[in-house]
Length: 583
Figure 1 (cartoon, rainbow, N blue to C red):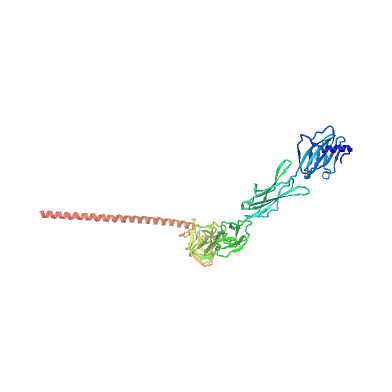
Figure 2 (cartoon, one colour):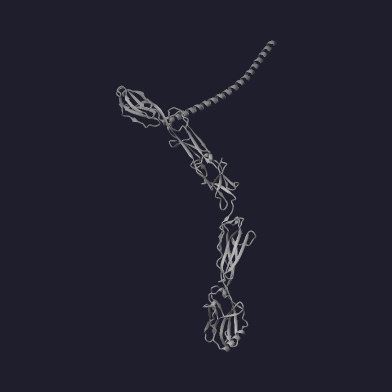
């Protein structure tokens, strides 16, 4: 409230107020304050000794004053005028500094400090500027996607509660976007809140995208003025999904394999490089002119060799955009003839063939009883040692898991064959009789004494190897005996006898059969002897040819000598006749 003074004083005060002048030397003074802070305005006047009181006022837009605070120099009391917008917000210090808390946009006025004496009024004006930092800009109303070569709204950049208003700028990958007809269109607008008097700025961007904008960040910023000058706040980056049409299709085989074999399952996958990628395609199989509509995959199960060929796929609505791949289904066939279990007789011939049919060169391996053979078996005359389990195995080295095998179980049968030998012990006290037996299935051997028919059970047998074994007995006969060896299998019973003299009677021993190992050594020696003989025959033949040529040349020379001798004889006769004539 205004101070209580006498009417005469009121008149003097009014006159002084109307006559108040700006103190010489004082310039305009500006106080910058942030929104919501406390505005501090010093009076900037020297306090005179005859000061009566000090007052603060602000000026309305039309220039009329509004008094807001009063302080007496004598009573040290402060009075605040009844101004609603400054209620409970003012503070006037002893040095007449005025503080206004919770600064508002409406506080942006011209305030004046007044010091009044009995004969003068001094004034010092202060201009208050209030600033409000805007909110961090954000991109809203974002487009869910952008399409290449189309001008489309990208979004709105909005920044709120600014004072004074700011300016919004758009960026692509950190570079400022400038308006460009048909490619970049920017629309800016601002709104002021009637209550707070704060600005909200909005900038809308329409942008024509290309594939170069894929994964490119877009941002915006707001530039504003604060108490300390110009500042800029940037938004968060936003990356937009860019839609573009498919320009190329590709086809591939899943799962990726170095080679495909019969029985495999394969999946064809067709892909387009557009965004979003195509979801359906047309698949074309070898020998099928009509395409098959499917998702981006098509599966073939248990493929056969006739599935080899070119596979293609294309877009549904653009069949000229097509991709192809060649698939080779590898195969491997093996035919063993004969196969399974085969029974043959000893001495028979048995041709064996293992025929291979494959998509590329295959390796072939022969095994007999799990031992690798150097070459494929062929039998012109079967022996017992030829019997066994034969396996023909083939594989394609380049194709994992592609191998085949078939087996032949060869059984060589033969009727029992017997040969008996005898040998006297060097001591002369016993004789060893051996019955050599050959045949398959294994023949059973039985010894008997001819005449008495007694069976001899005390025998010693060798192992049965390659269809052969022997049984031997050791006896010391006191008289001549005949021993019988009988061998029997499922095919036949064979009997052979041998006369053995008494131990007291010397007799010629019969040599044992040579073993298989010795037989091979004998065969090798025979081969060596044959080789030597053939070599000698060839040497003799060469010598004969040389001798014949020599003799032929010698005969030719002798003819010439005889001819010369004949001429000499004729000359001698002529001379003799001449002498006779002269006589």
